[in-house]
View 1: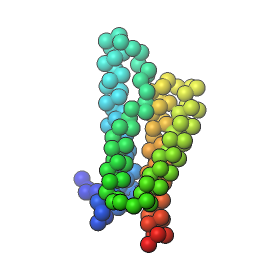
View 2 (view 1 turned 30 degrees about the vertical axis):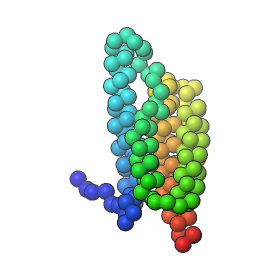
View 3 (view 1 turned 45 degrees about the vertical axis):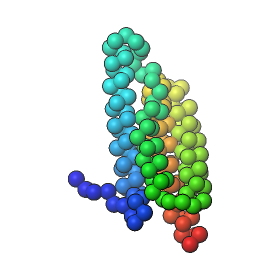
Length: 136
C-alpha cells in the first residue's frame, strides 16, 4: 500500500491522491448507504433505492474540510473553496436532475455526488495552485 504524498503544508500533493482519497470516501459512503438501504428494505420500513444518494458525500466533504484547514489562512483558499463548491454543486445537481428521470433517488443522488466530487477536486486542486502562484 502506498502512502499519500503531502506537501509542506499538509495538503495532498497530487491530483491523483486527492481524487483517489475522495473516490475512496465515496465508495465507503456508498457501501454504508447500500447496507442501510438493504436493512430498511428487509425490515419493511421502505423500498430499496428511496434514500438520497447525496449521503455518500459525507467522507469526501470531510476530506475537503481537512484540505481547507491544511491550506492555512488567506483569502485565496476562501475564494477557491467557494468556487469549487459552487461549480461542484451546480454540476452535481445538473447530473442528478438528468438522471432522476430514469433512476431512483439513490442512483441519481449518487451520480450527482460523484460528479460534484470530481468537479470540486479539479477546481480546488488546480485553482488553488494557480491562484497561489499568481499571488506570489
